[in-house]
View 1: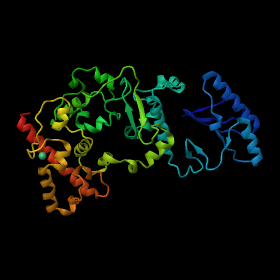
View 2: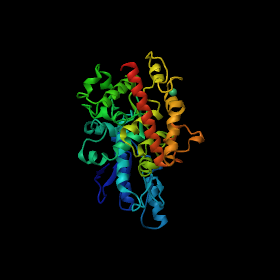
View 3: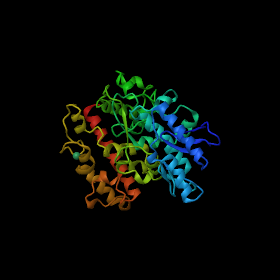
View 4: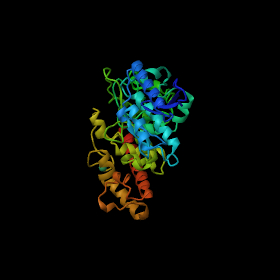
Length: 392
Ligand SMILES: [Zn+2]
């Protein structure tokens, strides 16, 4: 986003936002011709041409005939109200949340930087871009700080050479590690380390200041587990995808809507974060729903040769689904609770698996919170039994 003063008389500055530009000029043929010359020169210099068939001219005064005449000078379309800029109605500026709009604009920088395609804009700004992909100036970094959490949720990355994707802050392979491993994250020495940098490190512990808590140590094991799946491809650049539309392309309009409607569009396991519960319980719920807890079946898949038997019922094999939905031990815990505090527990007889209850909005929030806490307690019991049996 920036302002550029063109060398024409009485031509007011134009609003340039990456590939979406707006010019404010007097409604005179001469001025429009000057603009056309400016665009032609720009094309000669940069190789980029303005697609006039996609452009619109909004004339705020004069008869329809004059408006048509002016439109013909540029060969673009005549705009009608409500006039939109970047897909959002400008005529209702009063209704538009400008700070959110601004954030949606800024996020486009993030998006363009992370896309592998080289653009003129990117080359020009390359030297002013910080490691997180945003213009390295206080104006940008201050304004964007509120938006970054949204970036994390709304974008997913496709891993290539790992040079742009940050280990902790970016959403890759469906996970954001700073959220997934919160205790360990507080011990990280470099919170902006990229995947390629991590892949070159032989001892993971060197990424952290001395790890003291049990939780952080458990999370370190989880990190090893996650990184053992990481494959970088040096031939391909990392890519980024906007998660909330079919095309996967970010637009300012989509970004604006997502931030305005954010809580509503968070679906599935994301709803876990809205529950009132200690963060580590929410992380647990998220891991369970995404099949990322270190149950024996998951360890077997990683090639760890452990006998797969549930330590709670000692009858069936252990999986997240078994442990939290099907195990007789867990079922008896749920029904005992339902008998003690019926109002706090969802209806157990309607066949909804208890793990799915966490994100089922037809169940009251307090009941979902109770289920999360119960499942966390079952998991801790399972861990205690596993560690004491195996002498871990
Ligand atoms: Zn069991």
